[in-house]
Length: 146
Length: 139
Image (cartoon, rainbow over the protein chains, first blue to last red):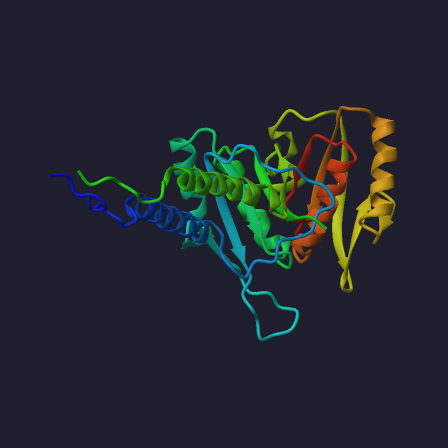
């Protein structure tokens, strides 16, 4: 005897497994990107303005040197700025060795100088000299569009 | 046998991935930063040590010095506080005079702010000088 009007049982739940997969992937992606971006760029740097420049298409093998100013209580006197590379503070005396090591590891090293606009040239010149000493012959000065 | 009647997640996953790629690309284009590239390293030891590299015969030495709160550019007898327009016009004029094989050596004083250095360097690039080196401040 056939039973009419009774439908077979169906699973009415939404399959959330792909959704969770995607959400987890997104969370991991943004965590990693955020972590890398935080390491690469230090806050408190006012980028200088430049009327012309170029974008960078190939971002591989780049090393960002952040030069962060330190506030001084004496007017007109600038304290030695802090130098940050990959989220770690580096002493100016150690920068040359670090650059040479990186240059040996990555021969196509691209150096990006991200310095505050108020930093005096006396603190920029040694960094440029360290780059020259390490054999880095291409420096990219980060600037802001007007 | 239980049939699967849940929503089809495939289009949603497709759309999410497209949105993700769109924002990744969009964020890289929307950045306000750009770069001034220098292919000539600083001259260690300053202008006195200039013979360590093969240099073009013609050089333009730009010295940047602070006058009060403003930086002044000096090229020989030419002096200007207008680091944007007037200096750019002068550099373009010199470029026409000297031709392609000319090198600029930018030597700011110790207390010149980085912003002024970048402004002058940006002008050199704009005036089509392809070899710009940074000198050490004179003591």
